[in-house]
Length: 98
Image 1 (cartoon, rainbow, N blue to C red):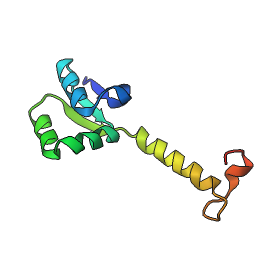
Image 2: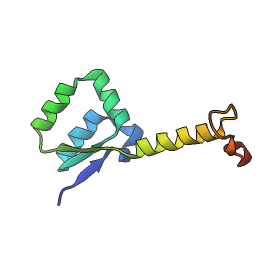
Image 3: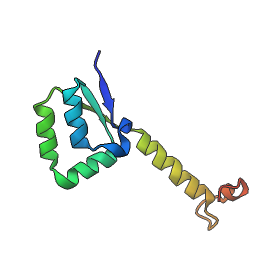
């Protein structure tokens, strides 16, 4: 059995670099990376440095956190449904969503 760390558990209290160090320290095997934390990491470091880390560490990337996609999709759908300008159905207004 492998132990995977989900970055959603640290949300705003950590970053990818710190999470990777903590995962290594505490014996995790895998990490599920949040895209917002990856984006912040890439503002300071290169993708090559991240690949170097994974190539030289026991920790391996498992997946990108899918809930970010679900949350974004849901938000965009609500906005589309609530638009009264013909782009959406406007149904959201009748449901008290607009």
